Length: 156
Image 1: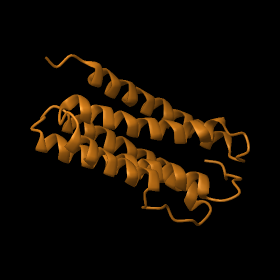
Image 2: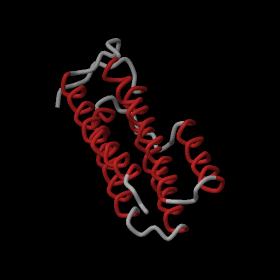
Image 3: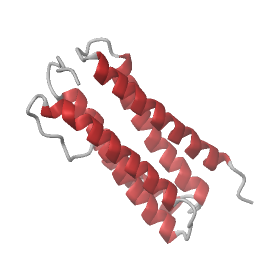
Image 4: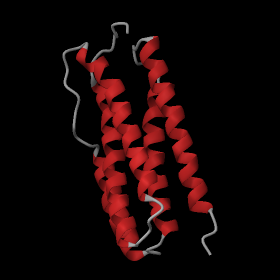
């Protein structure tokens, strides 16, 4: 792995934070699925939590090169997303489709954060780090599409 020439660790910590948000969002989604007695979704949500944990582990060495510690926090938007998920599930459908719609919105936030990094040419990052970010985004986009497919599936 090459040494990165990034101005500060903000970029990597933003990516770690959105992964922390994703993990926390899916923990909340598991609680809601359990409350609604939806047994099929928690294993999928656990897979996506594990996926984000792996993404974080892959990003950490880039911070360690700079003697920076990875954040264990979440973004404000992630906290708001989880609050919104609670409110939405309490007010609307209280069903699988509503829960999956909320999860898709979380995946949208993740996608936006990663795409902003990939599309922003102002970052001075190595090719290795850019490839890692693009790989993680591609994997997450598959998860995002799967959540959308499940959401749009007919549950009658």
